[in-house]
Length: 311
Image (cartoon, rainbow, N blue to C red):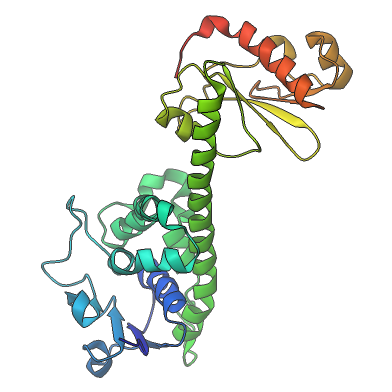
């Protein structure tokens, strides 16, 4: 079927149909985007996808609303918004259009669904309160996107439509950046897994560049690793490995005697020529060369040897 029209409701907008529009306008750039509540537009028709309006969910007919009763639910019982429904049916095609390779497609689709789509679904349906974000509640993505709506007393013709059109590229930037980051993380995990197999029992993991590494280390069960080294633009970095996403606690810290030192002071404290910097919080050290950073790593392992397998 050739899609000729993408139809969502007129008036004020929310994050779910805005983000749905990002997915659909990317896949069907030739289609006209129509904002209307007129039944002539919100009922099924050849070449038409209707979402967040119409009070029906029928993917075969091109209907993707969630306001009806009973409302569409995920397998776990959480409610869909229009965004969740569109992502469930068109997410894989969108990822292919964005260049995500087939071997990472399912993983990126799942991670984006859990981390990005599901929270939008829950907030749109009132299944969670925005206040759960605490003092950051006003800075969640749904709130920020809805802040792009015109003011209540802007009565100019087409104000809502103009605001909606202007909001789409902003929403698109968030979607594309998040997809790109998750795809990159999948690539990084493959590289880290290979590096772990090459490193054997070493307490130090050497990577070809800076990249996300903790998840791959955990997935590999590499509990023996304490530190990671990798080249930067003109020097080398030594970093700690955090114990989890929600903590800054590391498996082992860099030596306390290095904290906050730079250049000659750090060289003197470590005995390593080319040592340049150690962060005061002891999670990062920098050296001029690979040889120097590996020497620092060996010293850090010796200092943290009593930590044991702390993953």
